[in-house]
Length: 147
Image (spheres, rainbow, N blue to C red):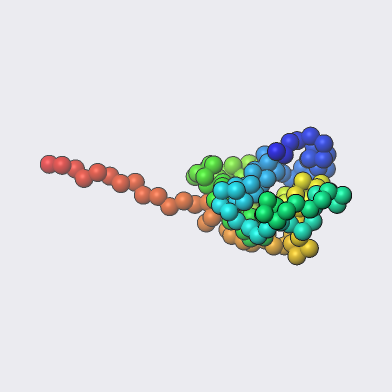
């Protein structure tokens, strides 16, 4: 679990664009994508600790592209916050998918997330429009009036 101590606390002092909740949420959304949605391919190529031995591929972590993570974040936000998802994200300083990229690459810099050599910060840009992505369609059904 990601906590606002150590490297993350130092990051939050240096980069005040996003609240700690945004970092925790992105981390939770990654877990949701991997464990609940089964998204991603086997194992990111860069271990957190280069001295640490590689895990067996059968139990390794699953890697998501920037676009996949953005979609998982959208789904997780709607599941957690429903119609308020966009408002909640914006209250944390997140107003577009590029912000998710900034958060992810900040987490990579402090060694709380991993990346492959192919991953780029730009992979998160313009994945979807927030207004459209977090607008759930719904209909209120009015029961027929009996006479």
